[in-house]
Amino acid sequence: MRQDWADKAAGWVANEAVFDAVFAPVTAAILTAAAVGPGQRLLDVGCGSGALLAAGAAAGASAVGVDISPGMADAARRRVPEATVVVGDAQVVDLAAAAPGPSFDRVVSRFGVMFFDDPTAAFANIRRAATPGGRLVFACWRGRSENPMFTLGSDVLADRLDPKPADPAPGTPGPTAFADSGRLAALLGDAGWADITIRPFDFSCDYGTAGGDGVEERLATVLSTSTGRSAQQQLEPRLGPEGWSALLDDVRAELRRHLVNGAVRFPGATWLATAANPGR
Image (cartoon, rainbow, N blue to C red; front, side):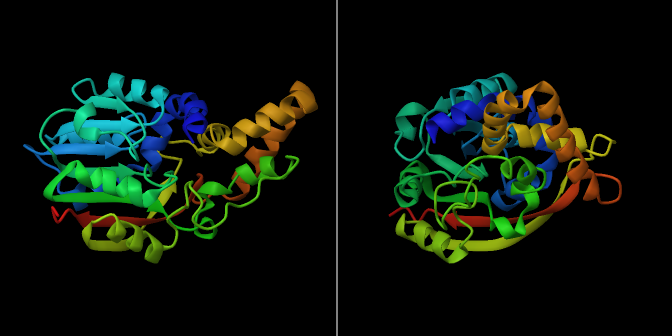
């Protein structure tokens, strides 16, 4: 997972404005549920290039981010220079030592907690860094069948790969690891969190916020995923420049077949999870 995110960092950072626009409703929902405000110390787990971290700092919190990818962490530091950003695996890193200061009043994450090999250990380690009564709020994806985010456009590339990527087994570390809300609740409880609430949060993944049809924006983000990078590495040398260009045109055509009101828009299905640290 560390290597995977190290490889993804460049593509994610290059397209951070697109991701930030698409995920803006999720960012807002997390901040509202966490009631982030002045005087709090906030930890953003899997902070990526710093969108949620920046929003927390703008709300007046003293912000700390942790991410396993050095490239992501560097981008977050540039974006939120007033924040402390730690490179490390939140499953095992000593967060109190890595970011000295008071315990965290709020722990938040936007799609950053689904990649742990041992989620119970990770959530327990995060809880130890939170103050008694501190609140955990994060968003994670529901199932792949509910989320065109994982298929629209990328399936055109995946169908050409040999072997074709298989859907991950339920619970496997990755974007949809917590699709089963019952399993997620049990993991949080086993890690010592209390007052656990997991509710659906649905939003529109809108790639047309810049005023165009969003096709090029969606294509760019598809190419920054694991599937997109694998396709380019495997298929571009095999197909040659013209063949690869034609394949990308096939992706564009698939996206245009699914435009909604003139732009790439599709549903996003997530869980919004909240919990409290009982301090035991």
